[in-house]
Length: 153
Ligand SMILES: [Zn+2]
Image 1 (spheres, rainbow, N blue to C red):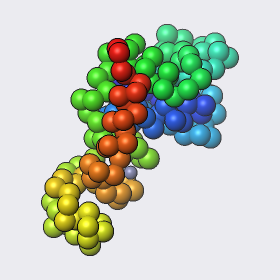
Image 2 (image 1 turned 90 degrees about the horizontal axis):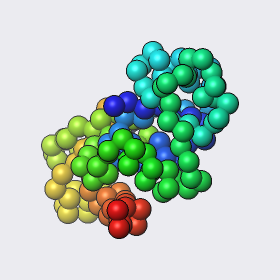
Image 3 (image 1 turned 90 degrees about the vertical axis):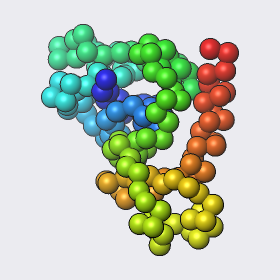
């Protein structure tokens, strides 16, 4: 399932990418273009905008997000679409929305700090921004936040 988030949902979009969802997002996209892109790419519109959903081209292709915090929003969206927040954690670039690929340690030797190279076992990289991800960078902090959001679910 592919999504496109409206300009007000930047934080939600990044968190959805972090848990592996395909979410297109631009903070400067206009409503008309957003609706068109959704149709063109087969994406469901995530929005808080009650005017946007009245557009003819958005009909039947949106989900109205409630809640002011990204935590509430993430909870709502994962529940609605049966997304397991842990299953695909950190498999997609948070900035580019591109799936990450595993890389051999040797290939990124010069690109990460020596300490990281020595202590981390697995690395993933984004073919778009070339950023290198390793578990300790985001994972621990993210897991804590996810625990907080999904505790008691
Ligand atoms: Zn990237």
